[in-house]
Amino acid sequence: MAPSGVYLCLSFMIIIQTSGEDIRSEEMFVIPDSKFQCANTTCLPFISVIITDIRNCRFACLAQSQCEAATFHRSTSNCELFGDMLNQNGNMLADADATTMIVISGTRFPPAPTTTSTPIASSSTSPLSAPSSITSSLTSPLSAPSSTTASLTSPLSVPSSTTSLLSTPSTTTLTTFPATTAIPKWTITGNMSGMRAYHTASIIANGSVLVAGGGSSVSTNLNTAELYNPSTGAWTITASMNGVREFHTASILTNGKVLVAGGLNSGGYLNGVELY
Image 1 (cartoon, rainbow, N blue to C red):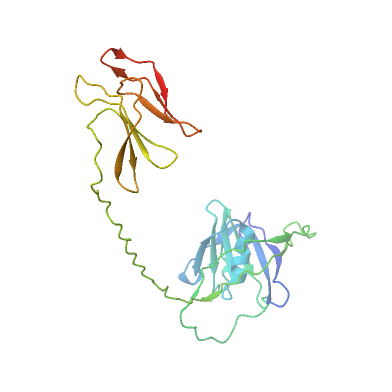
Image 2 (image 1 turned 180 degrees about the vertical axis):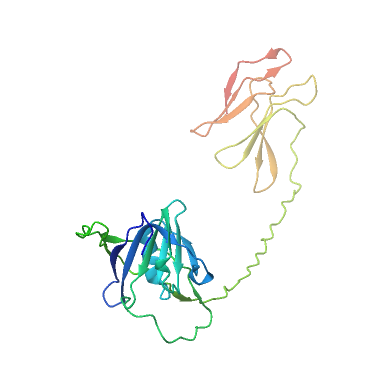
């Protein structure tokens, strides 16, 4: 029946889904190292899929109710599924890269459906996919040297129909208006009793501002000091420093006193320090 070098093997495949779902099974002839001659278009595959191994090729055939045979090409991982075979298993070609499996007539359970169902609107059928989880056990070969019985068990993978539910996301536009901040303005307040530059200004414990030293001209250094009262805007003359100085520093101490240090006068740089 088959050409030289082609061996006929019998494989029985059972695929079981989880409890409460369908059970599918079928028996297949397994013919290693062979493929169909396909002398006419009646034995051309109705679908070809890329699959990981021959086992998943068998499951792919089981998932398609019109599948009557499958050929797996190892080098390309191509699984060809055939429908109307018309006894094509009598016309086989030797091919070391291929393995052909033929469904034994009447062994498929459940039988191929004889009724058609109206497709549901907005539904799509997912493409053929091989089962992602396979639990299989292979029994030992039969006594006949040219026959092998394989028992495969795996969760059934059936193309599913999914109804798409489209929802239009609501769009909320939030307009934020920046808070209006008043631009600070300057207000004229009381003048110092005399002009000065390069002086210091320190806020003392009672809130007044102490202005000390500086210079009133290029050649005149000052030792005078004044206090500014922010509540009245008025200046008051206070005690003068012991020496004239400008470009000095003034620091507020923790006890509330003001430390004036360094600077320079007409005689040069200073190292004198005073407390107010």
